[in-house]
Image (tube, rainbow, N blue to C red; front, side):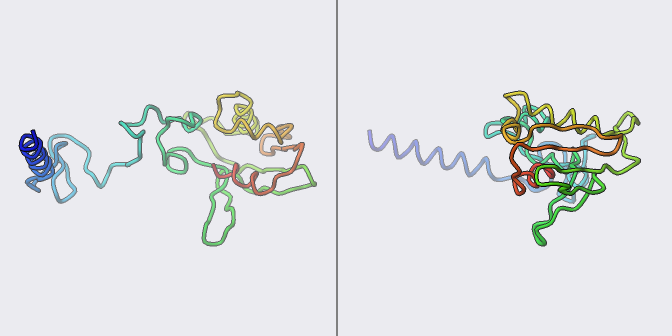
Length: 178
């Protein structure tokens, strides 16, 4: 019995080594080693890579699907209100023009003018309010936000006012760039 197990182990290891070896000329999807593509596939240097789940490709690309979306799409495929610079520890406005605390429990955000959706329609404060209100759905990835946020309202086309039950400044900053 031990001899069979040793032979099986040796064959399995040999099979894994053979599988890992490639000719180096091209990959299974037609990409050549110089980054260009063959056979109609996109070249590797023109491909956006992201991660899926542990066992396969992404189930979806919607970042509101907290449990199975493609990691890394926020900031690449989906733009955020602010970007976070880890070197300076500061938020940099992106879709937002600015944002500040106007009171102990009130935060006002100004959107940049000229931002449009992919269909050409302007992005408005009502769109931001709608997006944050999705968090009221219990299955959303940021549902807990509504435990301390009481209201999001569009003041005008470019201004959103957030009113909090409890101000959690650091946690709020975190939601602005995710």
